[in-house]
Image (cartoon, rainbow over all chains, first blue to last red; front, top):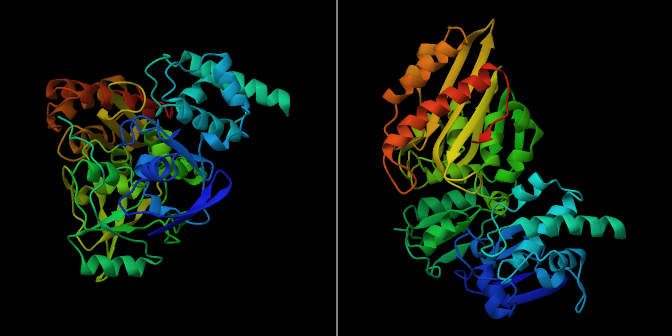
Length: 157
Length: 296
């Protein structure tokens, strides 16, 4: 089946099988390896992408479900090539990652949060990240990274 | 043991644009078709071979099924309304507090952004968190098929684990909550605070008048083959004073109504004890007229 949607601002039109998840479509057809395959059943958050600005699990969506009106954002789409946005800078500064496997999902989840709530409280950050698992950091540095990203954003606006 | 997650099996995929088309497909393929709404339950089940589908019918492009509105004294929640949208709805926040509290402690935000209320009910997990609130709010569901439609009260809808009164050619198109004066509260006990399945959950609806329970309904999840109403508890409380003694007696009484099992999350014995604890806490909360509940 023909699949058409917007990916990071550009139109994509490709063939896909009905049984192909968006996750496999992004990784295997479009070589977007920032979208990680962890549990493949919606539990870990590593495959998080933004669907029209909202975080969703790409392992629970079929690629064929998308339409021309849908926009998917991956971590490649949050900043210009060769540059970092505030969230990425903040994760670097505050050591918001170690192995990095969960990081693309964390960055996108942070973007969705800060786009709708520019100065979230620690409780609001914890709520938003309920479904993004990290086995390295113990989460404290991730919370600090999101707070720092909020500061950086506020300063630049 | 958890089943292994494998690539999705092969299936045919259709994306109808009207409800009539869906109902006709269900009429023609009643046993082979599965409805895809949020996909947060169906897709993992297909991957684990815990569900089978020759035909997946995607409901996401049917318009008019996601509305949340008030019509002649009833709150109507469309079968495609997302859990996150229901939680954010000011109408639901005002009229069905326990449902908002339950959704707030279900799964995680990305799952709630896709998952639907109808899907949570149709999966018919004994631990489904939206069920106890809807049971105490006296909700019913609209089941539509090419043959017609019928309304089913929620206690008659759940038949057992993953079993409902819905026939293979039917679709749950709407959840309907009659508006009543009173407050509702939900609490859940999980293995951790967030992103967890309920070990025991409880909801209560009550109207307190002159210090007495004028109206009271209690429901529990994950303590029987289906979510259950605590009818003996309700009878013991109705018309009686809201006080610690009556609430303590009600909390004892709930043990006669639960039929918990032991599983990976908790033992039957623990669930039985916690049924009393949660019953007491939701009743205390409602007795105070407060709504500060959720995960405990």
